[in-house]
Length: 272
Image 1 (spheres, rainbow, N blue to C red):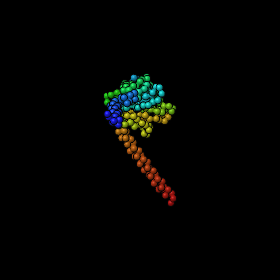
Image 2 (cartoon, one colour):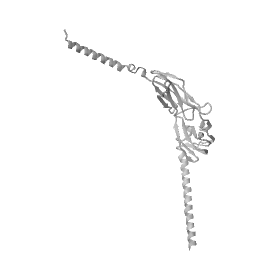
Image 3 (cartoon, helix red, strand yellow):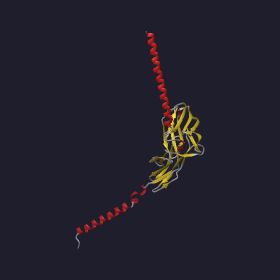
């Protein structure tokens, strides 16, 4: 008969083999380990209305997913150059909220994300929070729309197609009208946008989309002349201005020196 120690040794070996088999099974089956913790995804595009029924994809808009039960927002992203977004979410019941400067915030209907869920084509169309002044720009046989979002008055929009520069006049009457957003088709600028107000470069920012520049700036109260050009064409224009300014400065300094010499001669004549 086998001894008790031999039986215990065989039992321990069988137990080790069983545990090893179970571990291999678990490692080969990630769904068993993860279960309901696997994620799902939600994707779509955000558009903004410009003039009438025209829309543009909004680059840089924020899309946030909020859990309905707790109100917690575990994930948020900004839209890419095409206005698209993609959110990876844990299982749960959510709503999406979309925000963008100069546009009304918009929320989605509630939806459920389960393990492996793929929800696409969540498309948003945002209404402007401020009115858009719309101009039609003709360039190289194409007609472009230029929306300028602001509560301020905007007039006299012109476009220099040879230099690819915009000029317009703004009148800011109160603090709520100081902000501006201009959605500029990329074809209409030579380089990245630069804003000048009353012939002085103004503090501005822009988001670069696949087909548009989204240019923002604030301005003080009063009436101002605005010029927007591309980084390639604007330096040439203002380089000429610097040459003119330098020339005027030299003329002015020459006049001062000449005048001081004349005064010195007159003074010496009367001192004799």
